[in-house]
Image (tube, rainbow, N blue to C red; front, side):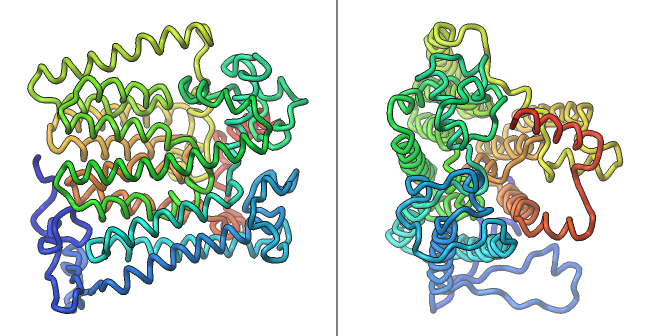
Length: 499
């Protein structure tokens, strides 16, 4: 595979090479991180080299565990701003077994928002230290830390967004009330006990058919059982996804410790993805499995499994052209496409039998704006009213061009897929922090140091823009990123869908 970085970049500590290639190994076990060339070129004063020791990595991992535990304990104490819909209802089965460990903090206390923001910043620093010291930590310690983080977060009620109840709401709509979730909304069953805990009452389901059908059994069990079953499966799925990332790293002859920590220790993944129990992991498992199968030479299986990922979330189709690049010679590409098409055919027939010609509602999600989505911020910057429909169409064209460029350049296909996915995430009108998990495994496994740096920079952007303290500060400064014409239209539409 072609290395997509300069010689200076290849010596960086976040590179994907053995320790000896990442910096000078010192006698005491420290790893020297080289000075950034773009920084030293501008400053005449020599900068000291930063040494990361194994102890620093262990302390950083302990910091991640303590921060996660603190947030979970606080969030379970009672109704609060960290857990949406908790002010509507917060029964013990919702709050979890850690409920009552500390006295309840006020449900609308800004201290919680500021504290959660501080935790995100502390975890971000710890994440960088953990990643920089990845090759100095034992695999046993890393696995223990990642599993412990998942166990802690399993005890949490869903943080920041309660999509988990929307999943159950659509499942009960189809599996219990026999209504097509692609043609009906959750408000069609207002008598259902899950209704008051859901948010998108008038939004037809945007989720893929395979995920939708897989959740139907949840409709046949009591709501608390469905809630905890979905949480448990999501957390176990996240561990399976991380195990696949480690397996691919070994198949590529790379250190799996770096890949695991680059993905699993990211604070956005921990505090938004896992603790929010979002369904992205169910797309990422077959997506990563398709890569692993391709590296094993099982081409038809790789294509077939990728189709399963597409049936969960359509965005996984972006990986297909890059699998075809990796599948050389041409006969292998034919087998990948055979597996993809042969799986698509029965899935399509099942889909038609269950849902007819109705399709997932991607139209609303592709036009609704979040405050800090890149198109909305750019539209505000150039004073056209935020993320207008015209600007979103331009963003879509840019994503297509980015994919075409990365396919055409025929470099490291994993890095090409990573750059294309990063462009896709940055183009989304409805940008949410945990979408960074789409990019992280590709950046960790690819050879491009530039991609890893860009991913870290975008992660920092998401932390800073989505942490609650940012909104509080902007309110004090009288700045509203949704004050443009597109932002106001999006808020009005969102209000209608939530009623």
